[in-house]
Image (cartoon, rainbow, N blue to C red; front, side, top):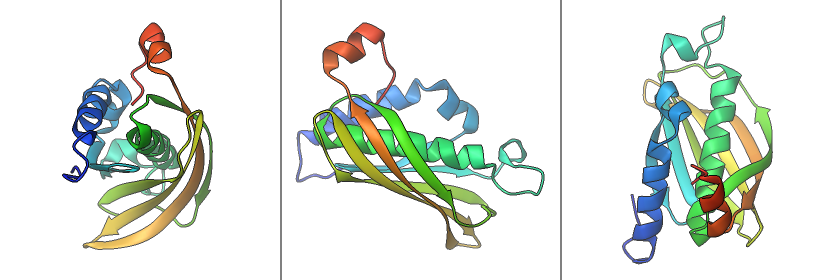
Length: 155
């Protein structure tokens, strides 16, 4: 889950895990932070009836939530700064049907104030991944003092 070649990352990863654990919506949805490295984040959620829309697909809001959270966390790993989503563009490529929904985010351009992060979402059916969405996000990088003053649970 971490890069042993980057010993400074351990503290960043620990803070992110603590903050993600405090996110009520992450717990409500049942999403899990399954991979974390410098500039990368993977979040997955298992299929449950509460997460589906009327045709039995994962609801687009679940896909959007995974993109929102994974891109922000990936940005936070780059420089060890707290981060908040500024905006994202989400393309739903095909219906999200399967046993699990996985979002993999990666930093394209880290920045002191804004980072650009891409994400791809896949559904897993019988062990096979199908690409169901792609996104590009602008993530606002916060200073520690701003995050502390607002008591932000952001990564």
